[in-house]
Image (tube, rainbow, N blue to C red):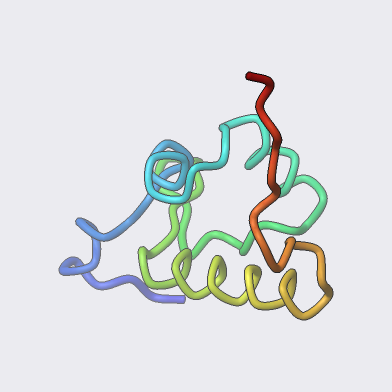
Length: 83
């Protein structure tokens, strides 16, 4: 994939994905190792970078797959508090 100069500001690192999506760095690395993280759009100085749109599309699709597979609770879990 070719990345234009205008897109360089929109390239995300692992830290950017952590900050915007909420996964830990370790979780992202494991997902990448297992092939569950979207492939990087480009490597800069040997480091993977993703376009913001790539990450957002991947995350949205991932959430939909989890919902369809019923891996996410349809209702929030309720915890009763002791008084």
